[in-house]
Image 1 (spheres, one colour):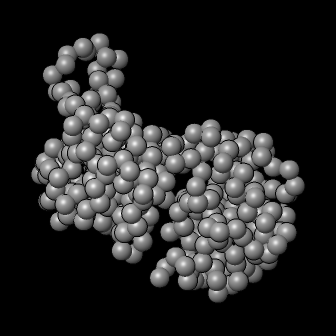
Image 2: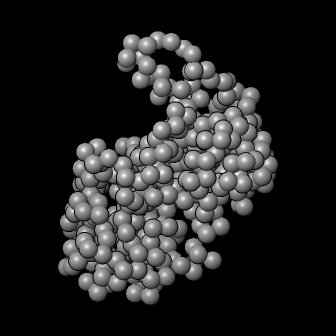
Length: 336
């Protein structure tokens, strides 16, 4: 199968070249968007990342160019217009699981760094300042962790925080996970979780129902000392409301690996241009905000698994014309 691979970074190429054996892949550094979609002409499939534009306009061009398969290098699929894809008869495949440990461990790393002010301590020591004032943290042991979403990643985070750190676990998910229940976690409503948790970590998909799940009302219910971590999807958090909550001291600290307007920022070097997003720039001014550029997935094991699953999706479609469950993404199954 001939695959047009967009948003190709050197680490992507290495992972796919190690895993590849039968497909003809053309790597494009450019992001997939209406302006770059014509590059896919002569291919049967496109391979896209979360930063690519898979709106109806892009899909129109891809379908006209003869593309039959859209391979997503991600578990999430909120960046693709599924109804437009189905209207063109495009099959959409994803990577439902690669390394839940990668994202869960990054979330906990962010929480620990915030709690013990590691980002501020690092900068102080580099400048020869060994003063401890302002770096006071708390023991997480015995505190309450609230985990929203208890799929593979949420379960991995729960295992670290509950059995690992000795935290009380409150979790929220419409579909209880027996593995998480076996850890002693209590499934509660979102309000209870927000009110009682010292650490809130988001591990749920972005859907119309979960959009801006953390908004002004939610921040008002959280403990003023609480730490919020989001390594899931940027749209789960109302960023403007988050800025206000930080200004008013309604929450203690926040760590973000995702941002609702990250498409124009992440996965590129803007150091010579500066950040023109005013809301994001305001976030960067808070000493109790820690932000990374969507790197939670970024481990050697995860990249290898993403490559292998993506290519197996291509092989299955090329051989059988269909995809294994739950790798297939359809509007009927995922937008109900």
